[in-house]
Length: 486
Ligand code: ADP
Image 1 (cartoon, protein in one colour):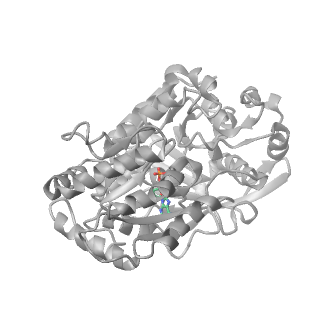
Image 2 (image 1 turned 90 degrees about the horizontal axis):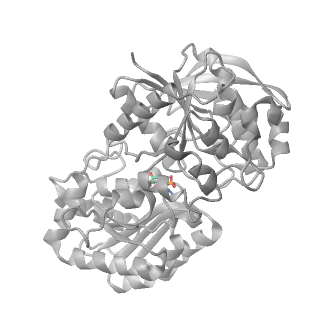
């Protein structure tokens, strides 16, 4: 019997994307469908979603959602995930989901109560609209703090639907004082025993709610699943996560290999593959032209793409620009987020015209052209639950330079240590000098054209699709159905 799985998420590629969460939820459901499951998606119908690009039909209107502030009404729309037969349901309500943004802060970190209102409402509305879908899931798969309340709320449903909660980023937990939360959702802690759980600081913690109430819980790489049990990476939840024992699993992310495919990516003007790798140089000179850099295919091109938060290591990149340029290369930076980190990027570009290019903002098509045009991709993260940037980079033949942490450690073995299995350059202490040392090793490889091309071809040929990991999620769903939490 095919399992019916409903993904509930704040982000879904290509409708609304800020980071890797969107890519996961936009790619895992179709992969599960290929394995015979009936996976579908539920998300907010944000004001930013372009309805001309994504045609949708109304499925339900005026569905009441009770909150502590009275009753609000939502509509439900249905679209298809582009290029697939995966149904996507979108919940519409102008007050909570209208407006021109997904999150209130470009770095995706929550800092204002309106953001809680948006996603607490999303949780309440998700349950209210289940009836109108005329399709009852066996499993509800929730993602990150935005959906953390849902497993607790679903415990009252009869028959009970099994729940899975995935931690994509422990750095963003959705914490706030409990009275404001309970006032908004119109409940008291004693209404549902499980809602009484608070974190060590006594905050109502949406992510923790998901962890303790879901029937199964995982994060997005085996290494990160271990790291978060330590004070260094546990973000204050290490002890509570240790208490989850065997329940907490690590399943590494894949990527949508149809969407990210340099041989037919519509954002590229020059296409190439591992077999026709020579054409990658054309993608590089096209990028150099687009970014106003000196057009010379022999110059090694480094890049960085990511949300500009403390997590992603932009400070280390900033401290390493001079060293990187001294060895002859070019640097392309794309990202948005914290002011001071945006300034590091724009300052580097202003100081080194023709050699450093920086774009502040979110631009998915430019991101793909950067992956295609790069020889090396920098990802010196302080912590990294899985990381998709390095996987996409490898798919496009850009050799990753990463800090050996979390999913980066699991997916990028170091080439200096193991030239037959290595996929990039890894360093460990979070320090600019260690990143610089890895950059120097990358330059040394670049000078040996044959060896460098061999590595590029090898990383482009690795199967980063969701096939393997989708099977592991099917196991997790079975486990959730067998071991329902009281
Ligand atoms: P995270 O989920 O922490 O943001 P990941 O590496 O898992 O990091 O995923 C980031 C995804 O978002 C990748 O697909 C990356 O290419 C994309 N991305 C990040 N910043 C930008 C940007 N400014 N413009 C376009 N794409 C971006």
